[in-house]
Amino acid sequence: MVEALEVRSGARFLDLACGTGGVALVAARAGADVTGLDISADQIAKARTLAEDEGLAIRFDEGDAQALPYGDASFDAVASAFGVIFAPDHALAASELTRVSRPDARVAITSWLEDGWFRLNNRLRPDYEGLSSIRWSEAEYVRDLLPDFELRFERGQSTIAAGSDEECWQLLSSSVPPLKAWLDTLDAAGRDDAGRQYLELIADGALTREYLLVVGVRR
Image (cartoon, rainbow, N blue to C red):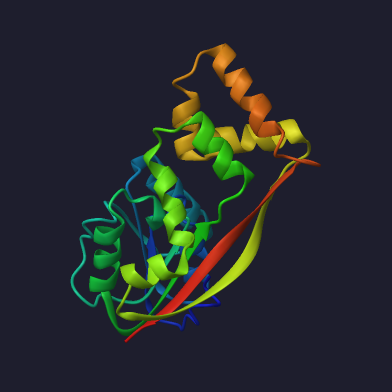
């Protein structure tokens, strides 16, 4: 994502819905002036620790992608890796992203495509509001959300791997915040049943999923 944004030294860079700051760290290593924002205080705390461990000067703020605490045209680049897509109000989040982007600013967003993992989530967790995030994988829908950007779309694959299928599931179930929060609402039998079904999607210790990368330049 940082490569796609063609980040230059000193560029004002926002990692939106940054989680533990994976994109923010890469952008800071490239010399950008980086800010990360996430609604989870726990994720922000982890991001700050990772940045401090590397000696990287990154500002991390707790906040909502639907009400960004930044002025108009604050950033030269905005990235969101599987983040802003989970904001409940897509139009409001897209409007805020646009507002804080200066003219000619670049944006990069990744969204999951509909696959076995999504369909299992849909079956097991039909009330999960994050299921609407799949709309961000529809090019025309995204164009309607971001009319002020010239957009292009690319597909890629993401793999999360561990030493075994069970270790991969343990990693996913303990580190994907919405999944962990849902599993914590289940009793032991419910967690075991869910785990068996998710494990069917993991092979050779890895989960591979396709995603859509949206890259744009503000007009």
